[in-house]
Image 1 (cartoon, one colour):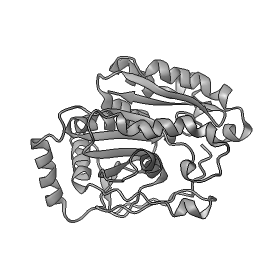
Image 2: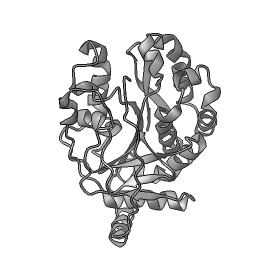
Image 3: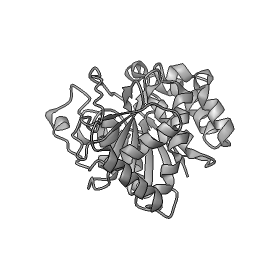
Length: 300
């Protein structure tokens, strides 16, 4: 939402050591399923900056619906996840890149907030074995990938997950978007990652279904957001082939570019929808936020 982001510094540190151990761990994961249930894949609105933790976003009651939805996120998987994989709108790289730190730091990728916003902590462990499994699956699908040992949790990850999982006790890995923001590329990434859902991994796409900053400031977000949000609600439950065809051509939808002048906050949905397989989508959260209509979409 009012989501000022400092200029991105693209950092890619190739993981040169330890791959053998990670690969062995991944092989063990494949042989011993971590869950008896296929976990859902979720596209959620992460709000603006550190919104739940600072008093700079207007009346709290205007955000209560999103707060309640985000708190309930931990109850969406039928079983406690063994790990969480987050595709955040706030990370783009030339190739799909995973963070591989065992103890990821925090990345405060916003500016202009009170000091408390820069003292927030969400010390969830990383999962190098899961990161390697992600690379293996994407590589088998023909993707070149990379790893980043130093990247921390950006606010697309730590803000909603700090609300949903305040104890920060589930291993979490971030996966980047791919520069160029091609929707078919991200749908294909999701299809490649779908097996993780049967291995105890909760796949979360963190973005916003409406992300027009000028509209938020002007106050005309409702009129601009509704046509595209309605289109998303119609698209989510469609059979997979039709759903993916529509999402691949999302910019032809009613109000598409008014909702997303730049589509980085929509692209996490493509990864999640690709991972959905035959599961139909539902819209469990739909609300007016800062004058615009926003939604969450769940599969499975």
